[in-house]
Amino acid sequence: MVNAVRTTFLLAAMTVIFMVVGFVVGGEVGMILALGFSLVTNLIAYWNADKIVLRMQHAEPVNRARAPDLYDMVDVLAQRAGIPMPSIYVIKTDQPNAFATGRNPQNAAVAVSTGLLQHLDQREVAAVVAHELAHIRSRDTLTMTITATLAGATSMLAQFGLFFGGRSNNSPFGFLGMLAMVIIAPMAAVMVQMAISRTREYEADRDGAEISGDPLALASALKKISSLTRRFENPFARRTPGMAHMYIANPLAGGQMDNLFSTHPAVENRVAALEELAQNTGTQPVTSSHRRAAPRRGATGNRTSWRVPQTGRSTPDDTPSSGPWG
Image (cartoon, rainbow, N blue to C red; front, side, top):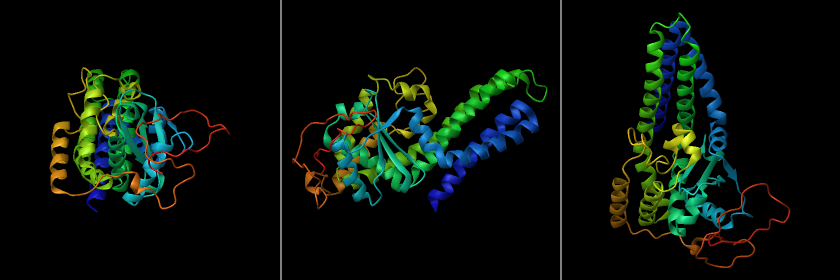
């Protein structure tokens, strides 16, 4: 109930921002048109925002034949989380990061970067995936995905008003008002994203640690990701900064304006909370002993290294091989 009320409030806030932009651009007529546009955008976003987000981040689907280690890991963790197996996507970027999307657990996807698989070990990747599954289980992904879509639409609407509304006599604020709106509207949208992400990241850290049974692995993963995001750029997130709050860690870290409004809690605080959780719990980390009762063909036991999934179109020669999780 609390989650539903919070979601409704946040989406209403984004709609109000839409209407304010419309009023600045075209007065009362513009406000009404913006309201209609926001309602249509909300409807489209509910059904298709996950596909839009995955496409904009250039995420490519992978199956078990191409990513046996990752696929089996997600399968086991999804069972532990009590949710259906989500679709798996990979983003080709050296920056280690991940996000989840989808309107509900039955229509969800987890996207991880190739950098995450290259720079983190198995325990850390499992902890990151568990964090994303926690978002799916708590249905955070719907709000986060729709808000990302609306934030991008708000910025686009404001810029549209600047370039095409400057000649209109309907705007009660004139050209300077629209120029100010181009700056203020995206900032307001980011503030709404901050309200979504900050509290929910702490909750997903805690729930993800419960799912993986390994709080210290998630703490270690967050420290590595935080450090490496300053070394490697995510070009897809850079082009769509309104989606930054969806990632487990800010993919824009290190940019000139990226710390003005942070969509994520401080990594140090998240790590401290996880270390405290580890001290207060006696849960065991997920290992290969948690495999499903009937392992898939070709099980070879534990592996100590990751194989980065091959992306692109599948071929008939793709044959399954087992990784450390199945």
